[in-house]
Length: 342
Ligand code: ADP
Ligand code: MG
Image (cartoon, rainbow, N blue to C red; front, top):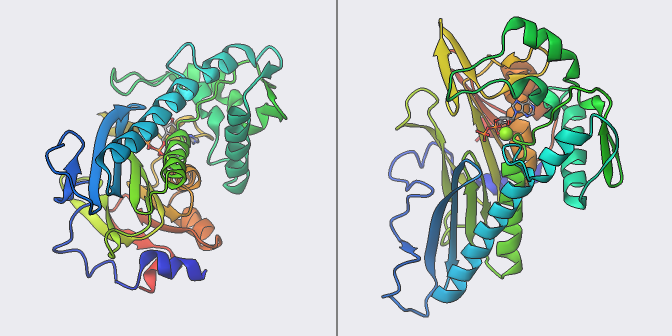
């Protein structure tokens, strides 16, 4: 587990609490539209765009303005492409085609879709089904903006469709073994998109940068000789950070019950569902996972949220190279073993 210490650098995460600049809000970042400064010294270039129902933020260090702009545009284009393929809200997406047809028989799918389904199944196995893309068999009937929830009868009618083992995958085709199965890759798609973004940066020779899509981000290299500072939002005070993490070459994902939710009769209905009940999981306020790949940290943050602090932390402590910060429903923050020692 030696990689963990170097990733977090030797600075205690508390020593940077004050005076540190927040990730994504760095004063020295140069806007892409600012073409007045031409320099041969590398400078920071950033852009933020609304994609995948969230804010996508890219930040890179490079000496050439044009090259930097083209690189950031390539990352944004990839995010749009992934959104078009994997959004269940778009009728023309590949996932919508699968959802329409896989209940009736085999559906041919792309290599990329097959890889995402395979990865999802792995995370489901690893988490004993806490992560389950078939959660959407019931999840599809929630609308957090419209404050809509399925009634008890609809939940009972669809609960048997929730089981990742209903998704049968063969090389490049998939079918559902239960007619009411509906899948949604929202638990890993943003992380996957972030990984693809970082891959594009690396292929284009960028050594220092970051890509974030909402609560999923990944950092490439350091930030001018210093670790990047990634803030974990306070789950009940929107303008406050619960903790700041100094990080190098790390993926970070946070899942919280405050992103998409509404309250009714004292119950908080939010977008992370416990697959065993078809209802919002209530074991945590937020879960942050640190690891190497954003697709994995994304899936794990959703999973640990469902598992709750005890089972979730036990799972993370068994996994080399992965760390967690959990804020429980009493507001208590706990760290995985390798973070507690810092
Ligand atoms: P965000 O989408 O805000 O980044 P998460 O990473 O926690 O938050 O992912 C939540 C999303 O994951 C939900 O919007 C939904 O698409 C999907 N999801 C919800 N519950 C589950 C679950 N038990 N297993 C897999 N995916 C889930
Ligand atoms: Mg997640």
